[in-house]
Length: 279
Image 1 (cartoon, rainbow, N blue to C red):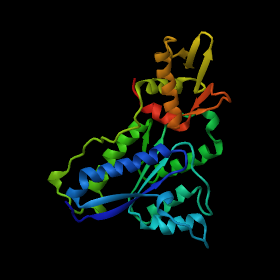
Image 2: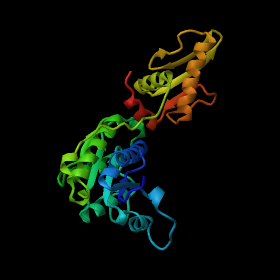
Image 3: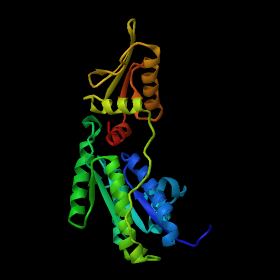
Image 4: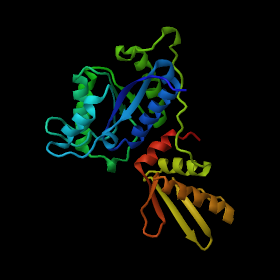
């Protein structure tokens, strides 16, 4: 059944190291729509430069994004982890510029900072230092949220988005106080087989984030975090773990590093997904 609704644009602002969070934001917004949009006569539309900007010449890329995307947005959700992003003419990064300009317009802004573990070799010290400066400036100007896992981020964002939609004057349309109810999110996370979950979780605990796939005369080993996950050399057992490794490779959670397919390393996204797995 059709119904009339007012559409609000939700800007997703972040550097390139939080791709999983950007996907979660979209999923949470879509889930909010599924649960609340008809009752509230409101639809939230997640937008970002990668999906809602088009080629244009004659100005800087960031100014074009500001004009095409940012200025049309009503709510902004910003996320940071280890990077602040690429600097623009007037700001520490494009993400920071989007946030600052949105705040200057008086529209609601929700900021999140990740405290998830990170591989030190993958971090740029200059990016971290600039991010610390920006985070401190945010602390003095408002309230932001921290999270230590993707599951924690999803749960916090979903509940806090509901609160924002209930509390902020911009979104009061169609709200009946008696109907206010904050519900838990049911947004699914990436589906993995049990073997893939175990392998990913164990590799995230390995000091070097490494998985070794070794075939020898005595059989096959798949090793990580000081453990061989192949309990026996029966072909059925070996195939289960080989399939789990291939599953993680295909999803981008681990990356092949050895030239003969013997050494694999957990990816940035793999670490983030591993944090959600409880075994």
